[in-house]
Image (cartoon, rainbow over all chains, first blue to last red; front, side, top):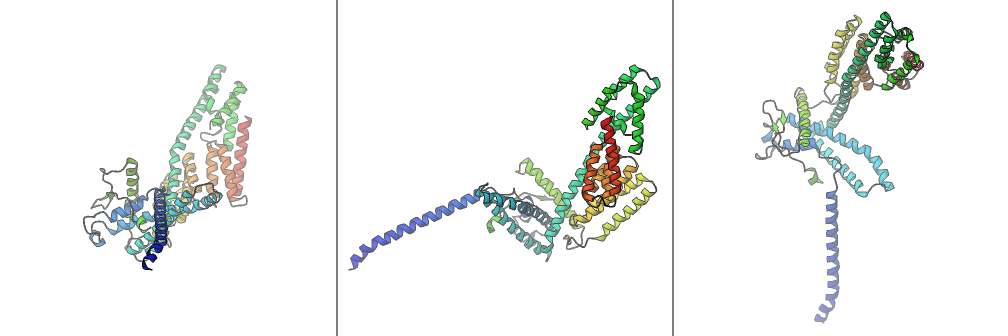
Length: 264
Length: 214
């Protein structure tokens, strides 16, 4: 009875063993592959520079024991705080980016226009940012109790201020360009006027021809008065100029005007 | 996840002991573009650090509101004296004072609400534009008026009008007309300065017609 039992049990036991073994290998292989695939996915954002710097500062002296008390005299707390603020500002920028991309990405994924791994990358970035924000808040609270509540407000304002300052900077940078353009135009206008004044005194048809060629590009410009105060005044000037110049043929003048208009 | 959040790139940073300024030693193993990025970041960090040190302990930026009234008071004082100079037709002096006020407004610490800075600077830029216009410095006035409008597009009729006026004075009528139409869209025709905008628009249109017919 005893030995019969062994023999008849061997088959189901072997069956179970093979089944469980194959399942285990399959699952471990599958998981390993999946983990590998997830790890090989490209991160959504480039390296977080501010965060790297913050951690680099924290770990600046690995030779000494890594307690904070030891390092406090080397690097003042204020630097850590500043670095943490920079980090929070960058976090906000990233969160805003994620938020603005999410809507578009979900529709694209639903329609099947983009691959699944893009969605996975996005979700991973979201999760990372969540952890990152939590981490920053705990760090901030560790420096000053209660700072965690306001650090992101401050960081948000800092980011907006940065954007605004940059725009103002860009606006002011255009000044040099505008100034050069205007001084060029102004001299051309003045030259035009001087030429025409000379014209008026000597008044010969040959010279009129030369003026018309030299003042070609700023014929239209002469509608802006060199010293006038209003557009209305400039109108009269222009009319006067044309009256003076009336001995030159009319058709080239209209062509000139169009040309300089197009130049702008 | 916990392991992922602990991963970071270590940079061999160096702190100047006396100035507490951070820098990256030149002999480190980063690519030039990386080094440049790190250096600009460190530069900003050092600036922020200096700003933080000047605060009262515990040296953290206060909540955005309420703002410190000291700087606002200084700026409005500068603006008042600049306005007085402008009224006395002392335009160079006015421009100088407005520029001081603008610099002060721009150097507001970053954690203060951006809305405050925008409001303040839009007024200052618009006023400086006016002073430039009085000196017939059209390009300067144009840039300032544009900055003002950029700071505060709505409820800023004067600055819109000044942009268009400067452009018209430089006989850039097409651009002037574009700006006038835009400003009329934003401000509405019945707004405070709508009449002036319309008047200028008519003038510009006339000038354009003249350009075409001539």
